[in-house]
Amino acid sequence: MIPNNAAGTPLAERMRPRSFDEFAGQRHLVGEGAPLRKILEKGSVPSCILYGPPGTGKTTLARLMARMTGRDILEINAVSAKVAELRDLVRGAENLKTLRSGRSPVTFVDEIYHFNKSQQNVLLPSVERGDIVLVGATTENPWFEINKTLLSRMMVFQLEPLAEEDLAALLDTAMKDEERGFGLLGLRAESEAMALLASMASGDARQALGRLEFAASALDAENGVLTRDFILQALPKAAIRHDKSSDDHYAVISALIKSIRGSDPDASIYWLARLLSAGEDLRFICRRVLISAAEDIGLADPNSLVVASAAAQAAEMTGMPEARIILAEAVIYLASAPKSNSSYLAIDRALKAVEEGDHQRVPPHLLPGAVDYAYPHDDPRHWTPQRYMTANRRFYFPSELGEERAMLGRLKKLWRRFSSPDS
Image (cartoon, rainbow, N blue to C red; front, side, top):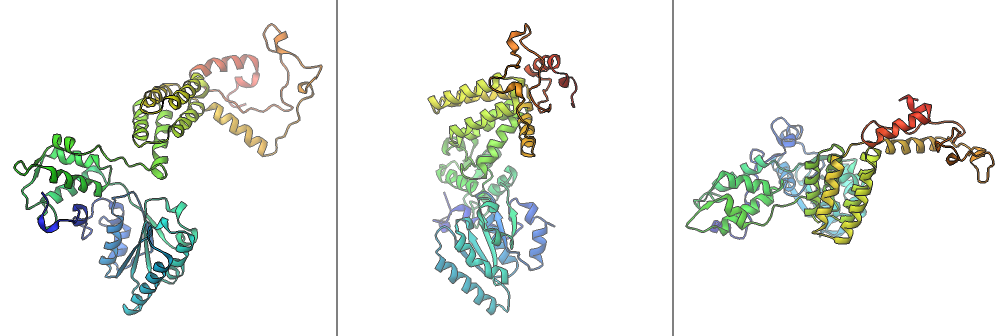
Protein backbone atom coordinates (compact mmCIF):
# COMPACT_ATOMS: atom_id res chain seq x y z
CA MET A 1 0.00 0.00 0.00
CA ILE A 2 2.41 2.68 -1.19
CA PRO A 3 1.63 5.59 -3.51
CA ASN A 4 1.85 4.54 -7.16
CA ASN A 5 3.80 7.64 -8.11
CA ALA A 6 6.51 6.80 -5.55
CA ALA A 7 7.06 3.16 -6.44
CA GLY A 8 10.72 2.25 -6.16
CA THR A 9 11.64 5.23 -3.97
CA PRO A 10 11.93 4.32 -0.28
CA LEU A 11 9.75 6.25 2.13
CA ALA A 12 12.83 7.48 4.00
CA GLU A 13 14.13 9.09 0.81
CA ARG A 14 10.75 10.59 -0.07
CA MET A 15 10.40 12.08 3.41
CA ARG A 16 13.87 13.62 3.49
CA PRO A 17 13.51 17.10 5.08
CA ARG A 18 13.38 20.04 2.67
CA SER A 19 14.04 22.69 5.32
CA PHE A 20 15.17 22.97 8.91
CA ASP A 21 11.52 23.29 9.92
CA GLU A 22 11.06 19.67 8.78
CA PHE A 23 14.34 18.48 10.30
CA ALA A 24 13.85 16.05 13.18
CA GLY A 25 16.11 16.30 16.20
CA GLN A 26 19.58 17.89 16.39
CA ARG A 27 18.19 21.07 17.95
CA HIS A 28 21.62 21.81 19.40
CA LEU A 29 22.81 22.31 15.81
CA VAL A 30 19.85 23.50 13.72
CA GLY A 31 17.17 24.54 16.19
CA GLU A 32 16.09 28.17 16.36
CA GLY A 33 19.01 30.21 17.67
CA ALA A 34 21.55 27.36 17.48
CA PRO A 35 25.05 28.58 16.49
CA LEU A 36 25.34 26.51 13.31
CA ARG A 37 21.93 27.64 12.09
CA LYS A 38 22.83 31.27 12.75
CA ILE A 39 25.98 30.92 10.65
CA LEU A 40 24.02 29.30 7.81
CA GLU A 41 21.36 32.02 7.93
CA LYS A 42 24.16 34.54 7.33
CA GLY A 43 25.17 32.65 4.17
CA SER A 44 28.32 30.99 5.51
CA VAL A 45 29.12 27.28 5.59
CA PRO A 46 32.08 26.06 7.64
CA SER A 47 34.17 23.13 6.45
CA CYS A 48 33.10 20.50 8.91
CA ILE A 49 32.70 16.86 9.86
CA LEU A 50 29.21 15.62 10.65
CA TYR A 51 29.76 12.82 13.12
CA GLY A 52 26.97 10.55 14.28
CA PRO A 53 25.19 7.22 13.97
CA PRO A 54 23.26 6.18 10.86
CA GLY A 55 19.86 7.74 10.28
CA THR A 56 20.48 10.93 12.25
CA GLY A 57 20.43 13.35 9.29
CA LYS A 58 24.05 13.82 8.21
CA THR A 59 23.42 13.71 4.44
CA THR A 60 20.26 15.79 4.76
CA LEU A 61 22.06 18.39 6.85
CA ALA A 62 24.85 18.70 4.26
CA ARG A 63 22.30 19.26 1.48
CA LEU A 64 20.37 21.79 3.54
CA MET A 65 23.60 23.66 4.24
CA ALA A 66 24.10 24.12 0.52
CA ARG A 67 20.43 24.93 -0.20
CA MET A 68 20.10 27.43 2.62
CA THR A 69 23.18 29.36 1.52
CA GLY A 70 22.50 29.15 -2.22
CA ARG A 71 25.58 27.08 -2.99
CA ASP A 72 26.19 24.27 -5.42
CA ILE A 73 26.76 20.86 -3.89
CA LEU A 74 29.00 18.10 -5.21
CA GLU A 75 28.64 14.67 -3.62
CA ILE A 76 30.90 11.65 -3.51
CA ASN A 77 30.94 8.45 -1.43
CA ALA A 78 34.33 7.58 0.02
CA VAL A 79 33.56 3.85 -0.01
CA SER A 80 33.79 3.58 -3.80
CA ALA A 81 35.64 6.75 -4.88
CA LYS A 82 39.13 6.51 -6.38
CA VAL A 83 41.83 9.17 -6.17
CA ALA A 84 41.27 10.14 -9.83
CA GLU A 85 37.56 10.74 -9.17
CA LEU A 86 38.46 12.77 -6.13
CA ARG A 87 40.83 14.97 -8.11
CA ASP A 88 38.14 15.49 -10.76
CA LEU A 89 35.70 16.49 -8.03
CA VAL A 90 38.14 19.04 -6.61
CA ARG A 91 38.81 20.53 -10.06
CA GLY A 92 35.07 20.72 -10.70
CA ALA A 93 34.57 22.50 -7.40
CA GLU A 94 37.31 25.01 -8.19
CA ASN A 95 35.71 25.72 -11.60
CA LEU A 96 32.32 26.25 -9.96
CA LYS A 97 33.90 28.72 -7.54
CA THR A 98 35.17 30.74 -10.49
CA LEU A 99 31.78 30.60 -12.25
CA ARG A 100 29.97 31.67 -9.06
CA SER A 101 32.21 34.73 -8.54
CA GLY A 102 34.23 33.19 -5.74
CA ARG A 103 31.35 31.44 -3.95
CA SER A 104 32.77 28.05 -2.99
CA PRO A 105 30.54 25.01 -3.53
CA VAL A 106 29.81 22.50 -0.80
CA THR A 107 31.75 19.30 -1.43
CA PHE A 108 30.03 16.51 0.49
CA VAL A 109 32.04 13.35 1.17
CA ASP A 110 29.91 10.60 2.67
CA GLU A 111 31.69 8.07 4.93
CA ILE A 112 34.85 10.18 4.72
CA TYR A 113 36.68 7.91 7.15
CA HIS A 114 37.00 5.36 4.32
CA PHE A 115 39.46 7.69 2.57
CA ASN A 116 43.06 6.73 3.27
CA LYS A 117 45.72 9.30 4.14
CA SER A 118 46.68 10.07 0.53
CA GLN A 119 43.03 10.56 -0.47
CA GLN A 120 42.41 12.89 2.46
CA ASN A 121 45.56 14.82 1.52
CA VAL A 122 44.09 15.50 -1.95
CA LEU A 123 41.42 17.60 -0.25
CA LEU A 124 43.75 19.49 2.06
CA PRO A 125 45.05 22.29 -0.26
CA SER A 126 41.57 23.10 -1.57
CA VAL A 127 40.14 23.31 1.94
CA GLU A 128 43.05 25.48 3.06
CA ARG A 129 42.61 27.90 0.13
CA GLY A 130 38.84 27.95 0.51
CA ASP A 131 38.26 26.57 -2.99
CA ILE A 132 35.82 24.08 -1.51
CA VAL A 133 33.66 23.93 1.57
CA LEU A 134 34.31 20.37 2.66
CA VAL A 135 31.52 18.64 4.55
CA GLY A 136 32.35 15.09 5.53
CA ALA A 137 29.99 12.58 7.14
CA THR A 138 31.21 9.77 9.34
CA THR A 139 29.82 7.20 11.74
CA GLU A 140 33.32 6.63 13.13
CA ASN A 141 35.14 8.86 15.60
CA PRO A 142 36.81 11.55 13.46
CA TRP A 143 39.55 12.17 16.02
CA PHE A 144 40.73 8.62 15.34
CA GLU A 145 39.88 8.22 11.65
CA ILE A 146 40.58 11.62 10.02
CA ASN A 147 44.06 13.04 9.39
CA LYS A 148 44.97 15.54 12.06
CA THR A 149 46.13 18.06 9.46
CA LEU A 150 42.76 17.96 7.70
CA LEU A 151 40.79 17.84 10.94
CA SER A 152 42.55 20.95 12.25
CA ARG A 153 41.00 22.94 9.39
CA MET A 154 37.47 21.71 10.07
CA MET A 155 34.80 21.92 12.72
CA VAL A 156 33.31 18.72 14.14
CA PHE A 157 29.54 18.69 14.72
CA GLN A 158 28.18 15.67 16.56
CA LEU A 159 24.70 14.40 15.72
CA GLU A 160 22.81 12.39 18.32
CA PRO A 161 20.36 9.47 17.91
CA LEU A 162 16.86 10.85 17.54
CA ALA A 163 14.62 10.87 20.59
CA GLU A 164 11.54 8.66 20.43
CA GLU A 165 9.23 11.67 20.45
CA ASP A 166 11.04 13.09 17.39
CA LEU A 167 10.74 9.76 15.60
CA ALA A 168 7.06 9.48 16.49
CA ALA A 169 6.43 12.97 15.07
CA LEU A 170 8.32 12.03 11.90
CA LEU A 171 6.23 8.87 11.50
CA ASP A 172 3.03 10.82 12.06
CA THR A 173 4.05 13.27 9.33
CA ALA A 174 4.74 10.39 6.94
CA MET A 175 1.28 8.94 7.64
CA LYS A 176 -0.43 12.27 6.88
CA ASP A 177 1.72 13.65 4.03
CA GLU A 178 -0.32 13.37 0.82
CA GLU A 179 2.56 14.13 -1.54
CA ARG A 180 5.37 11.98 -0.19
CA GLY A 181 3.80 9.72 2.44
CA PHE A 182 0.63 7.72 2.95
CA GLY A 183 -1.82 10.63 3.27
CA LEU A 184 -3.89 9.67 0.22
CA LEU A 185 -4.25 6.03 1.21
CA GLY A 186 -6.56 6.47 4.18
CA LEU A 187 -4.23 4.60 6.53
CA ARG A 188 -4.63 5.06 10.25
CA ALA A 189 -2.39 4.07 13.13
CA GLU A 190 -2.90 3.63 16.84
CA SER A 191 -0.73 5.94 18.93
CA GLU A 192 0.67 2.86 20.69
CA ALA A 193 1.73 1.46 17.32
CA MET A 194 3.58 4.65 16.38
CA ALA A 195 5.26 4.78 19.77
CA LEU A 196 6.37 1.16 19.34
CA LEU A 197 7.78 1.85 15.87
CA ALA A 198 9.70 4.80 17.29
CA SER A 199 11.12 2.75 20.16
CA MET A 200 12.15 -0.11 17.84
CA ALA A 201 14.25 2.18 15.62
CA SER A 202 17.01 2.89 18.15
CA GLY A 203 17.22 6.58 17.26
CA ASP A 204 17.50 5.96 13.49
CA ALA A 205 15.02 7.91 11.35
CA ARG A 206 15.75 5.80 8.26
CA GLN A 207 15.08 2.64 10.27
CA ALA A 208 11.83 4.05 11.67
CA LEU A 209 10.49 5.08 8.25
CA GLY A 210 11.61 1.78 6.72
CA ARG A 211 9.70 -0.17 9.35
CA LEU A 212 6.62 1.99 8.83
CA GLU A 213 6.79 1.40 5.08
CA PHE A 214 7.12 -2.36 5.54
CA ALA A 215 4.23 -2.48 7.98
CA ALA A 216 2.02 -0.36 5.73
CA SER A 217 2.81 -2.59 2.75
CA ALA A 218 1.92 -5.72 4.72
CA LEU A 219 -1.34 -4.29 6.03
CA ASP A 220 -4.61 -5.68 4.64
CA ALA A 221 -6.19 -3.13 2.34
CA GLU A 222 -9.64 -3.56 3.86
CA ASN A 223 -8.32 -2.97 7.39
CA GLY A 224 -6.13 0.10 7.04
CA VAL A 225 -5.26 0.40 10.76
CA LEU A 226 -1.78 -0.16 12.12
CA THR A 227 -2.03 -1.63 15.60
CA ARG A 228 0.60 -2.42 18.19
CA ASP A 229 -0.09 -6.15 17.89
CA PHE A 230 0.25 -5.99 14.10
CA ILE A 231 3.62 -4.23 14.41
CA LEU A 232 4.87 -6.91 16.81
CA GLN A 233 3.74 -9.69 14.47
CA ALA A 234 4.82 -8.16 11.16
CA LEU A 235 8.20 -6.68 11.98
CA PRO A 236 11.53 -8.22 13.05
CA LYS A 237 12.97 -7.44 16.46
CA ALA A 238 14.04 -3.94 17.36
CA ALA A 239 17.16 -2.49 15.79
CA ILE A 240 20.22 -2.57 18.01
CA ARG A 241 22.61 0.32 17.57
CA HIS A 242 25.86 -1.47 18.23
CA ASP A 243 28.93 -2.00 16.09
CA LYS A 244 31.72 -4.03 17.66
CA SER A 245 34.32 -1.85 15.94
CA SER A 246 32.72 1.52 16.68
CA ASP A 247 32.00 3.87 19.57
CA ASP A 248 28.88 1.86 20.51
CA HIS A 249 31.15 -1.02 21.48
CA TYR A 250 32.91 1.15 24.06
CA ALA A 251 29.82 3.12 25.12
CA VAL A 252 27.78 0.05 26.09
CA ILE A 253 30.60 -1.77 27.88
CA SER A 254 31.34 1.49 29.74
CA ALA A 255 27.69 1.65 30.81
CA LEU A 256 27.87 -1.94 32.06
CA ILE A 257 31.01 -1.37 34.12
CA LYS A 258 29.73 1.90 35.59
CA SER A 259 26.40 0.30 36.47
CA ILE A 260 28.22 -2.52 38.31
CA ARG A 261 30.38 0.08 40.06
CA GLY A 262 27.24 1.99 40.99
CA SER A 263 25.64 -1.15 42.52
CA ASP A 264 22.62 -1.14 40.17
CA PRO A 265 21.89 -4.78 39.20
CA ASP A 266 18.96 -3.86 36.93
CA ALA A 267 20.98 -1.42 34.84
CA SER A 268 23.90 -3.86 34.80
CA ILE A 269 21.80 -6.73 33.49
CA TYR A 270 20.24 -4.44 30.86
CA TRP A 271 23.62 -3.36 29.45
CA LEU A 272 24.78 -6.99 29.51
CA ALA A 273 21.68 -7.87 27.47
CA ARG A 274 22.53 -5.11 24.99
CA LEU A 275 26.02 -6.54 24.52
CA LEU A 276 24.80 -10.11 24.14
CA SER A 277 21.97 -9.17 21.75
CA ALA A 278 24.46 -7.36 19.53
CA GLY A 279 26.63 -10.48 19.31
CA GLU A 280 29.50 -8.96 21.27
CA ASP A 281 32.55 -11.19 21.75
CA LEU A 282 32.11 -13.21 24.96
CA ARG A 283 35.79 -12.99 25.80
CA PHE A 284 35.64 -9.19 25.64
CA ILE A 285 32.70 -9.13 28.05
CA CYS A 286 34.39 -11.62 30.39
CA ARG A 287 37.63 -9.62 30.47
CA ARG A 288 35.77 -6.48 31.46
CA VAL A 289 33.77 -8.30 34.14
CA LEU A 290 36.98 -9.74 35.59
CA ILE A 291 38.57 -6.29 35.70
CA SER A 292 35.48 -4.87 37.37
CA ALA A 293 35.61 -7.55 40.06
CA ALA A 294 39.18 -6.62 40.95
CA GLU A 295 38.99 -2.87 40.42
CA ASP A 296 35.61 -1.96 41.87
CA ILE A 297 34.70 -4.70 44.37
CA GLY A 298 38.17 -5.84 45.30
CA LEU A 299 38.83 -6.72 48.90
CA ALA A 300 35.39 -5.62 50.08
CA ASP A 301 34.33 -9.02 48.71
CA PRO A 302 37.35 -11.06 47.54
CA ASN A 303 34.98 -13.79 46.39
CA SER A 304 33.80 -11.51 43.57
CA LEU A 305 36.96 -12.22 41.58
CA VAL A 306 36.42 -15.95 42.11
CA VAL A 307 32.84 -15.62 40.84
CA ALA A 308 33.91 -13.56 37.82
CA SER A 309 36.75 -15.93 36.99
CA ALA A 310 34.50 -18.99 37.25
CA ALA A 311 31.86 -17.26 35.10
CA ALA A 312 34.42 -16.37 32.45
CA GLN A 313 35.66 -19.96 32.23
CA ALA A 314 32.14 -21.41 32.23
CA ALA A 315 30.89 -18.94 29.60
CA GLU A 316 33.75 -19.84 27.29
CA MET A 317 33.08 -23.55 27.75
CA THR A 318 29.33 -23.33 27.09
CA GLY A 319 29.05 -20.48 24.60
CA MET A 320 25.79 -18.78 23.73
CA PRO A 321 22.93 -18.97 24.45
CA GLU A 322 23.67 -20.66 27.80
CA ALA A 323 26.54 -18.27 28.57
CA ARG A 324 23.97 -15.50 29.04
CA ILE A 325 22.77 -17.17 32.27
CA ILE A 326 26.29 -17.58 33.63
CA LEU A 327 27.26 -13.99 32.87
CA ALA A 328 23.97 -12.72 34.28
CA GLU A 329 24.70 -14.46 37.59
CA ALA A 330 28.18 -12.94 37.75
CA VAL A 331 27.04 -9.43 36.79
CA ILE A 332 24.21 -9.39 39.33
CA TYR A 333 26.59 -10.67 42.03
CA LEU A 334 29.16 -7.99 41.25
CA ALA A 335 26.59 -5.19 41.09
CA SER A 336 25.10 -6.25 44.43
CA ALA A 337 28.46 -6.69 46.21
CA PRO A 338 30.06 -4.07 48.50
CA LYS A 339 32.57 -1.90 46.66
CA SER A 340 36.21 -1.01 47.27
CA ASN A 341 38.87 0.24 44.87
CA SER A 342 41.65 0.15 47.50
CA SER A 343 43.72 -2.49 45.67
CA TYR A 344 43.48 -0.56 42.40
CA LEU A 345 44.61 2.65 44.09
CA ALA A 346 47.36 0.89 46.07
CA ILE A 347 49.12 -0.60 43.03
CA ASP A 348 48.86 2.71 41.16
CA ARG A 349 50.41 4.57 44.09
CA ALA A 350 53.23 2.04 44.31
CA LEU A 351 53.91 2.17 40.56
CA LYS A 352 53.93 5.97 40.66
CA ALA A 353 56.47 5.91 43.49
CA VAL A 354 58.75 3.55 41.57
CA GLU A 355 58.41 5.59 38.34
CA GLU A 356 59.33 8.75 40.28
CA GLY A 357 62.56 7.21 41.51
CA ASP A 358 61.66 5.51 44.80
CA HIS A 359 64.05 2.59 44.26
CA GLN A 360 64.70 1.09 47.69
CA ARG A 361 67.31 -1.54 48.26
CA VAL A 362 66.06 -4.82 49.68
CA PRO A 363 66.73 -4.83 53.46
CA PRO A 364 69.62 -7.20 54.26
CA HIS A 365 67.52 -9.49 56.46
CA LEU A 366 65.13 -10.13 53.52
CA LEU A 367 67.86 -11.30 51.15
CA PRO A 368 68.04 -15.04 50.30
CA GLY A 369 69.85 -16.95 53.02
CA ALA A 370 69.88 -14.06 55.53
CA VAL A 371 70.49 -15.39 59.05
CA ASP A 372 68.78 -12.52 60.88
CA TYR A 373 65.40 -12.94 59.16
CA ALA A 374 62.62 -13.47 61.72
CA TYR A 375 60.37 -16.31 60.51
CA PRO A 376 56.79 -15.25 61.39
CA HIS A 377 55.52 -18.80 61.89
CA ASP A 378 58.01 -19.34 64.74
CA ASP A 379 56.01 -16.80 66.74
CA PRO A 380 52.72 -17.97 68.36
CA ARG A 381 51.02 -14.97 66.70
CA HIS A 382 52.43 -15.99 63.29
CA TRP A 383 53.73 -12.43 63.02
CA THR A 384 56.86 -10.64 64.18
CA PRO A 385 57.62 -6.92 64.10
CA GLN A 386 60.32 -6.38 61.51
CA ARG A 387 60.98 -3.93 58.67
CA TYR A 388 59.99 -5.05 55.15
CA MET A 389 61.09 -1.86 53.36
CA THR A 390 64.16 0.28 53.87
CA ALA A 391 61.88 3.29 54.32
CA ASN A 392 58.23 2.71 55.19
CA ARG A 393 55.70 3.84 52.61
CA ARG A 394 51.91 3.80 52.76
CA PHE A 395 50.15 2.69 49.56
CA TYR A 396 47.21 0.62 50.78
CA PHE A 397 44.29 2.39 52.44
CA PRO A 398 41.59 -0.20 53.25
CA SER A 399 37.94 0.70 53.05
CA GLU A 400 35.58 -0.12 55.89
CA LEU A 401 33.11 -2.03 53.73
CA GLY A 402 32.41 -5.73 53.55
CA GLU A 403 35.24 -8.16 54.24
CA GLU A 404 37.81 -5.36 54.10
CA ARG A 405 36.58 -3.98 57.42
CA ALA A 406 37.87 -7.13 59.15
CA MET A 407 41.17 -6.89 57.25
CA LEU A 408 41.57 -3.28 58.38
CA GLY A 409 40.95 -4.27 62.00
CA ARG A 410 43.66 -6.94 61.81
CA LEU A 411 46.17 -4.60 60.16
CA LYS A 412 45.56 -1.96 62.83
CA LYS A 413 46.68 -4.49 65.47
CA LEU A 414 49.85 -5.31 63.51
CA TRP A 415 51.00 -1.95 62.14
CA ARG A 416 50.66 1.45 63.77
CA ARG A 417 50.42 3.20 60.40
CA PHE A 418 47.01 1.61 59.72
CA SER A 419 45.53 3.29 62.78
CA SER A 420 45.82 6.67 61.08
CA PRO A 421 43.76 7.14 57.90
CA ASP A 422 46.27 9.58 56.39
CA SER A 423 49.63 8.19 57.49
